Amino acid sequence: MNQNGSHIAAPALAIAYHSGFGHTVVLADAVASGAREAGADVTVIAVDRMTDVEWDILDVADGIVFGSATYMGNVSAGFQTFAEQTGRRCMNGTWRDKIAAGFTNSGAKSGDKLNTLVSLAVFAAQHHMHWVSLGLGAGWNSATGSENDLNRLGYWLGAAAQTDVDANADEVHPSDVETCRHLGYRVAMVTRQLNIGRSASPAASSPPASSAPVR
Image 1 (spheres, one colour):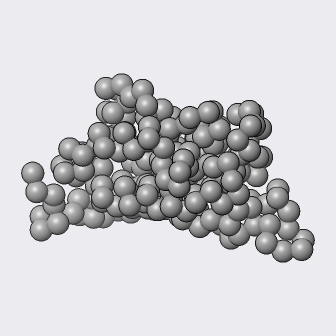
Image 2 (cartoon, rainbow, N blue to C red):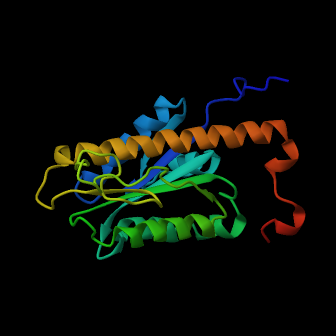
């Protein structure tokens, strides 16, 4: 048996995001870039204009990274509309045991972004997905730190960015872009590790009958 996982196909990841003013799509592209760097096959999907093909991509993906701007302390209305459209998939367990992660952006340094990340994580939990944290310590928290540190805003649940409300999309902070790139790389690596484990132990690929969703 090949033990290094090289025989395992590249993990298929989807970045499902909603962006109101273009800042969050920059972060989505950064997540995708990091995931591709780690060898993943990535599709970036704007959830406010979903096609049937894109729904199919989400259903067959090994993992989904969710992204939304933070508006009024929570996910955007566009993302919430998408979330509510997944109710049947939630009941059927369509996304069960996929990898999940999340990222967000707001105009204020805090902007209650943690609440958005919690909402994304709860959404993933309702779909019985496995949440992957950011995996970075806090940056910009010492006399020698700077705003150019990765995770400059100090979030752990997911990637968080801050962009001035009057900034153009190409003015998203470079540190936040790199932090999202790190998240994408991490998610791809964790997904590959999970796929390798499932290949080595096929019985772990599906839940026992007692935990299967009721249809």
